[in-house]
Each structure stands twice: as C-alpha cells, then as structure tokens.
Image (cartoon, rainbow, N blue to C red):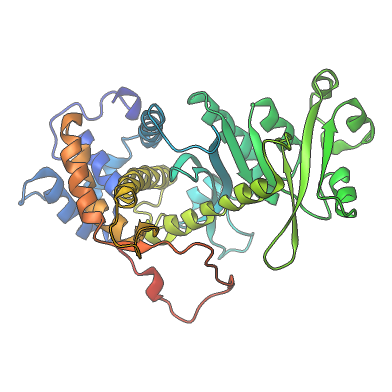
Length: 425
C-alpha cells in the first residue's frame, strides 16, 4: 500500500472509506450519477445497509491514491496468468498492437495533460490509448493513455519495452500500416520481437514500392550497410545506430496476399523461413490482428471506458486503468466458461462440431456487479466463486459462425441508442 498512496499519512486511520474499499469501488466502476452509484456501492461492498457517503468525500479520498496502483495490479494479474499454461501459435504469443482515441472530459488541466482535437475554443479533449492485446488469450497485456497529438509509433517501442520487462516470452506482433517506419522496424528487432506489419503501397521503403510493381508473391530485404548507403543524406534515418546493422545484417520478408474482394495487401515480416511459415499462414496470422478492433468496440461500448467518474487527469487515469483491469479479469472468467462449453462431448451429431462463445455484453454486465466477491476473498475460496461465475455465464451462449463477414459501414447511424449496443452496466 505504501507505493499506492500519495502520502504516507493517508489511510492510516480507521475511516468509513478505507483503502481497499476505495480501490474496489473504482475497479468495479462508477458509471451512473455519482451520488446514486456511491449509495448502492458502499452498502454492497461494506455490508452495512445504512452506510452513506457524499460524492465530495469520495472525490477527496480518491486523489489520495496513485493511478499506478491499478497498473501494478494488472501487471501482477498478467504475470500470474502467464506463469501457467496459455494458448500459443507455434510457440508464439500473438500480440496485436494498435492505438485508440479516447474522449476526455473537458477542462483546462486536461488541455495540458491530454490535448484537444484542434485549436478551436469549443474543441473537445482527446487522448490516445496504445494497447497490446493477446488475441489468443483475450487479454490486454499492456495499455497506456497518452497525449492526443503524439503519434502511436512513439508509444509502440515504449510499451514493447515494458512488455519485455515483465518477463521473457516469444512474441509475434501484428501491426497495421500506421506503424510503418524504419525506426519502429529496427526498434522491434533490437527488442527481439518478431512481427507482421501491413505496408503502405505508396510510401515507406523503396524496396517495398519496387516489389509492388512486380508480379512476385514474395521477396526479401536486407538491412545492412548497402541498405543505408542507398539512403545517403536522408534525415528519415537519423538517430539509428547504422553500424549495428553493418556487423549484423537483418533479413526481412515482404509477401503479397490477395483479399476476398480481389485487392492485394503487402505484409512485411521477420518470419523469413519459407519452409516453416507459408504466405497463407502469414495472411491468416495478420488477419487475427483484427480482433483488437473488436476488443476496442467492447472496451468503448460494453465497458464504457470513456464514461469517466472524474474530471481531473489523475482521476481519469484511475478510471482508465481500473477499467482495463476489470476487463481483463472478466475476460478470464468468460474465456474459462467458453473453454468448458467447447470441451464438452456432444451426443447430437448436429451440434458436435459447433463452437460457442459467451455474449460479452451480458457477461460483462453480470460479472461486473459481483467482481468484488472474488477480490475480497482469499485465494483458496476462488475456485468455488469461479465455478459459480462459469455456471451463470454458460446460460448466455452464442454460436460461432466462421467466415461470416459484413460490409464495414462508416458514419453515424440513425439511432442515438442502437439496439446492438444496449448498456449492460
């Protein structure tokens, strides 16, 4: 608790709102009017049906906690999970990385901490969250909320380093074309990451542009002394340790894949062994990176991560990292229930090969309310509670329908409260 308080004097007395209770309230989330949520939350968590708490007292108490507390809790959860068995692809942990815009409450402090969309007086405050998501195990393993006017490429290497600091894993990053830069490519190689990166067709590396003009399905690029000599005088590569690649050249593979609509995509990867990884597998692996977009949808619509209960930057950071922690915890329970259902033997031949998943919106709504039950119990009691959660979740199954896709529609729909995204919290 020492590193979680803003002062050593805080939470030393026996108060109505002690440290643990306050942390649980923030992790559970405050999505309604603060006075209403506080009334029911305090009574639910404390067990005292006559307990009361003003929103002023809560707001004063929350700023005695550092938002880093929730980051450390999430890191502990991640380390605990990966200390056991988890899903991999050929020994790789598949990590999709991408940025997501987060609308921030308006305020002068937020102008400084996060920035605005533009310089207009009535412009909204906005931040950008950089996320690294394990697509096979449904976990955000790294997240950060940053200033709006800083490109996500800058945060990629920072967060990649943090993931490495958490423990040694064999990771394969799935990256969109927004990360196209030689600094990102060489930085990831230096950190010992493998990656698959979608490339722009008209910008980025000359070798890729030349490859696109040919009929080849794949080609190889070597980052060595000649690679940099061809770019002599270019400021784009300033700051890179070129000598490092003179001594130890790096080989990259560029492949062309055809989409269902007939168009082509170009993927740059460190997976250069053509006998071990085919072009078809590279296409399939990159396609799995789309799951992070679905997770962003869940994060914004189901988890309501932009529904902040605070206006100041520190309170906003608390809400953001607490919601990520809650989302990870609930994802683990849902994944456990899905594995239970799909591992069962089915006697009906029509159902034998079908797979099911839990309705995420319903699952989040059901588990969020009772999440504190697990958090306040000691570890030996977790098994019983997890079984209770799983038995409740399997009542809300949806059949998985492979290869089903819908045309992506842009723009605002006709309803302010769409039926497909009704709130569960």
